[in-house]
Length: 146
Image 1 (cartoon, rainbow, N blue to C red):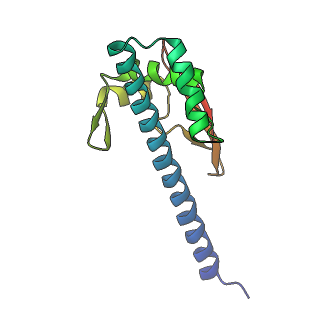
Image 2 (cartoon, rainbow, N blue to C red; image 1 turned 90 degrees about the horizontal axis):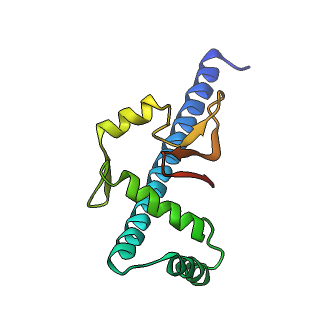
């Protein structure tokens, strides 16, 4: 016989599992954004200081594919978007040690434009989606799939 206490325990465990999954998704997403920002920063700085053009970035994408067999998400187009991401948001995102600090004005801008700060979305049943929502600005649009 199933008691009310047992049903409440199931609900509590389910809630803890879903909350943990959402937290993990947010943490993973934050790390991905930080990685994209750092890569964009490196490419942007090299482009400026060493006069890198699109051919060097294309070569970089191919060499990364060769070095990390099966690597996805780092094509020429993706690397170019990472560079644009850094150039667009470099005044709003500061790298302090390994922590990413998002300014309040950027957070407010995300909220005003209905851009989720955590691009991993959930549906009404709180299941974490595998799709990372697009982050859009006038100069940068990207859509990534996990």
